[in-house]
Image (cartoon, rainbow, N blue to C red; front, side, top):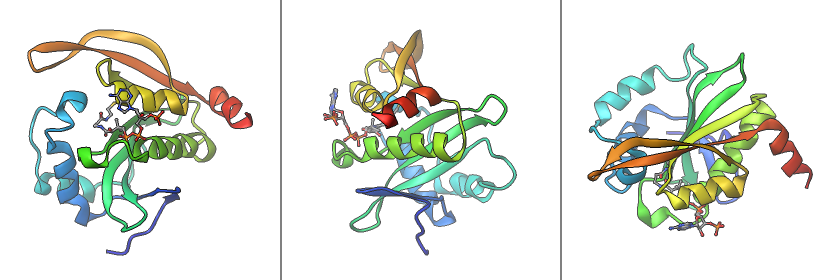
Length: 184
Ligand SMILES: CC(C)(COP(=O)(O)OP(=O)(O)OC[C@H]1O[C@@H](n2cnc3c(N)ncnc32)[C@H](O)[C@@H]1OP(=O)(O)O)[C@@H](O)C(=O)NCCC(=O)NCCS
């Protein structure tokens, strides 16, 4: 597979999803380490991911996923995406998964989120990027706040995991906030 960066960062780059990534996507979505924060309750497999990958980037501009790769070896360390991109309202929902704990706290999540936010505003001309995050996901909230997302509201008992219902924050960053931060 020829690996081509679509967006280049310092520690990581973002590249399109290829058919060969099916196993990695299944690995990300099945990872027990992300279940408490990403609520992936049902298994998937490489065959299902292959089917989905075949239809990526075709007609729809609603779902725009990337593989996050670390720059030293070019290894895939996560996935990030815009979902439900609406080119009339100019909004998108943001997601990120770094499946292995050994790759957490290395700055990859913050850099990937910064790169996606810049892509969303500077390239795709979005006006608002939104996400939902478990109130217990303090690492994720820290990353999003560091990049400029603000908490807008709380969805009470939005998801269930491990014998408890978890509240979720709605967080978002607006175009004007992004450019104000960029000027500083
Ligand atoms: C959430 C996630 C994307 C963060 O990515 P990451 O690469 O680990 O994050 P980074 O290393 O860039 O930054 C982590 C930040 O959280 C801080 N942090 C680490 N552990 C923390 C904790 N338990 N509570 C609060 N902050 C914490 C770090 O100090 C760092 O902040 P700083 O840059 O101000 O020092 C990643 O851990 C992940 O994919 N987790 C599983 C799936 C998930 O939760 N996805 C998001 C769902 S909304």
